[in-house]
Length: 494
Ligand SMILES: Cc1ncc(COP(=O)(O)O)c(C=O)c1O
Image 1 (spheres, protein in one colour):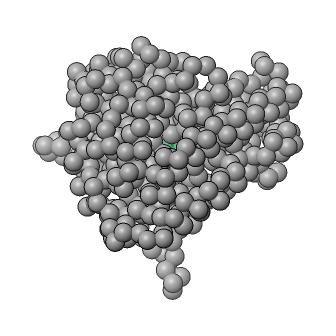
Image 2: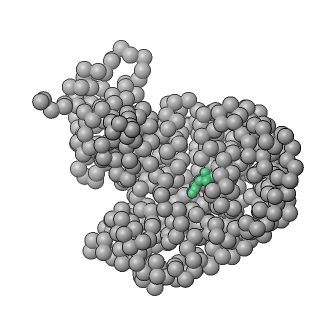
């Protein structure tokens, strides 16, 4: 069989008369060839210069398509050897860690391309408890006795309206309690009417994307970023622009600034996963830019209630006088992730559309749970629980920092992001293979996430690990880190 020739294929299918820009055509054709396995994993693509010459188009056109496919994970750049088809592209016969769905009769189900991509990029871990699972609070300390008493009271005589489909953006007393809490704790400036109660940040982001973006719209996202944001953005069909970070947070290049996006998705209070806080000047810059170009900023404020050192942080939303910020928060970290409750705070002008959109897309409900939570907040249990957990996690953070310092010299590793939240980022010695460390650590019973997996651009990724310390009992931290240190040393190339 004749080998697949990428230039011939593109020459045949590129339509020079089409109204669709050539860079978009090129992107779609290459993506199609990858999904159809004509271009298999590890195939080296021609250089952008060579391909542009063969197709008789500009090099920028090719670069655009390559950049986009790199950003979406179809291609990967390997230092000094070129651009290759990624080996994580869906292969339903052998997806790593993801089972291809099978029909009852044993035959394979063919997913949509979007579905295949979703599975290929799947980021959710099955292990959700223990050393050092990131982002999971100590749910064993949740005051479930208080919760169940409150819940029983709610259930004593629930009004009919609490048991039907919900409406209006959530249970009103919860929205009111939230407006008060967010003002006091996060300096979020809003009324209850601007809040939509959702099932968490995943649903909030999905709602934003569905109501405010169209496929092909440009979205800026931090590189590295939260895997869930990456999955949702990819599934929505927007064009992802991974933006580099510096010590002050999001740091777009002049070329990126020249092409304003529809959305800017950021974690300004505790960058996920590296942990830096966005500086005041960067916040101002971003707000002014968003106002000037009509962009929406989506602020993901997922864990900043837990602040151990330094001044309390204010939200970006609270600085926004131009109604450009959509603020997303969650009870997954402050209460427990299985609760599946979060909130979206909207500019006033957007709130009615989002209330309707929520009902149309997902139908709401869970009023008894929302009523219990409203009482939990109103009676002061929420603040008390967060205060207790902050002390507990602060102690665990110190134990982890101590364990790190007892196994490694400061020059060998670097820790970032430990002032806030439930995790820190540990940079490994140069030359370490963080994915191999994660695999070996798991075999020893320690779950960690390799930092390099969070990056769009492999060239920006430094080897490291994301370590969650909130759901690890104090006495387990040192022994678990000793095992991890062994896995780190075993995978170090001197
Ligand atoms: C940055 C970030 N955003 C959002 C979430 C998930 O939020 P939710 O559980 O509300 O969907 C997480 C969970 O770890 C996260 O790390």
